[in-house]
Image 1: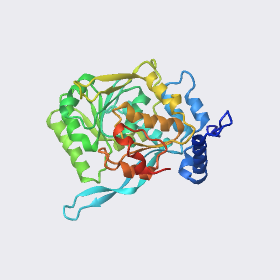
Image 2: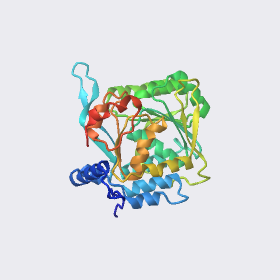
Image 3: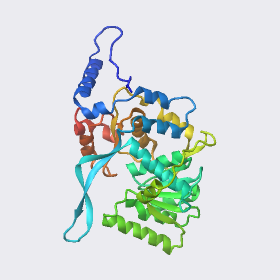
Image 4: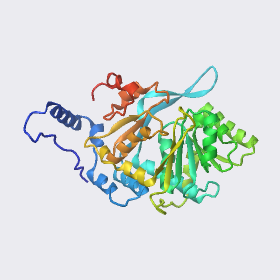
Length: 366
């Protein structure tokens, strides 16, 4: 399979274009000397297949993960366990390295989770059910998000730093069947769903049973729900995925129309009550195949924005379309952002005004 995307930069008029020439020269240098850059070259045939008329969003995503199956898709900072000799508690420490999951392995996890959610009576969901998510962007978070597309569910990503007073009315409004929550956000998330009559399953992601705080948060969440008399199954994402690996595969959902509701993104509420913006499957499908993201050069980026905002999803869209890599920042407060940039050496930067003046001093030229 050939790429067909790389192209020479020329000037039809024959005049010198210094900027274009410098860019072309730099790209050629990177292809020749940087293995990571060359390994992420877009494949034109994959992009063309994803843009076939009438293709539903689950099929678009499947086209990407099959076409780029062996490539790293998502990454994050590596961590090591640390035992405090004074307290005996286990925490983690960031390492100066990166961990990745391939497109193929990501899709395998998505399909396993889908099998559990459709074939196990304890967790069963149906097309059109709502899944609310509270947590910060990560490979686990995106796994849950992609399952919603796979099964025809409605994804409702909520702000990870929102207070209970803001989350509770949204939960009451959307009536989720499932709450997916990051291990670090369990307390506020559980407090927000105690009055929910629709909730049947809480799935905890970004969870490591070797970390004391994670285990305590999970035990506390189960106790809080039990004491409140809320009949909800609480499990970790890895547990549910492992269960799905033992079940027959579930085909992705193509029923109904691509005008179905696929996602609701709520505003921050800074100017009043949070309001939900509704996205259809067709809208999201057009976003994933938009010409503006079909760059001729590899896409390596660092995603520092939450997935409860559309801007946080644009780096993922760009990397999936081109077979690139999206790395998530190590800390949601952006305290590690410059280090993350330096490690990833991104080719693409999606910036907000507060970061635009300092980004190049952090990363240096690629």
